[in-house]
Image (cartoon, rainbow, N blue to C red; front, top):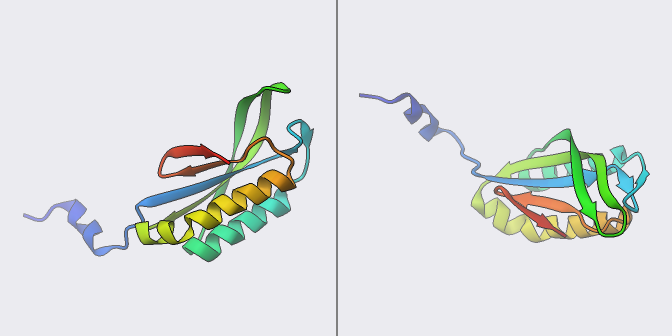
Length: 119
């Protein structure tokens, strides 16, 4: 008897997920247009993992200096296999470090396989 899920066994499986959270502020409280940075991040992810998707969300975090910060973030996401993740995870962290400096942030969030990391 054939199971319907057997159909998936013949497909390419990308079991790893990488997300970079691009804030919409600089220096924690100054709203800015980050559309070019989002485009650069999508290009960065696409060049390493073959494609990327972005979507917006309301992000909140507690800043020791500014209190509760609520802002729109753009989540840039790619899927890969374990070899692709291993080959590119350092570049993802470096990209987050560059965003942190460029946007004068206390931290940039990245998510790998469901675990959040603050760079």
